[in-house]
Length: 185
Image (cartoon, rainbow, N blue to C red; front, side):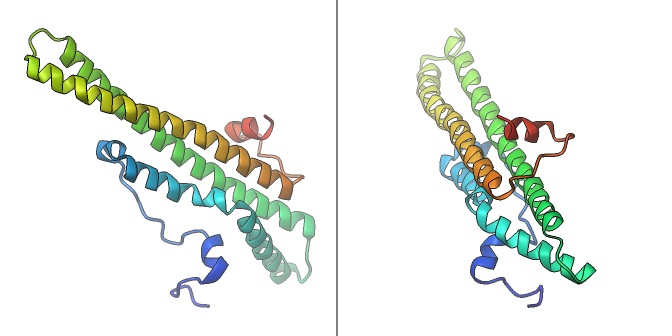
């Protein structure tokens, strides 16, 4: 199959995106909860397919080992597949954490700006009422975004459990402090 054709079937789901889309996140992204959740859903697709990706990575690494040495080195093939997918998971988790933290900061700043307007005696009563109403909206957004942190912890735990069941002898590298913390919890 040439690289210019789309991958079909489960391979299309399992394979990493060859041309990843660069998403520019702004305050608008954080204020549009549908867009924010859609973006997180896209980022979480890797976690949803961790078992399939491990199967695929094992097959790819096994094929590479056969091509290079003419025989299969089962232990090292699985280690390579596990290491490759772990790096992919960690990078993806980092991007999601940055997205959620950025949006928490955006909504917190917006909330603080509105509080300042409400507490400012120089603001007109109409401005204060409008800011008070917008504060409620921002508080709801803030709660929803913080809930995503809870969802994130659940998704990561599930992915680590699936990963452990397939990569029993894998340990994150000593240089990967965050990964080791999650692994040994």
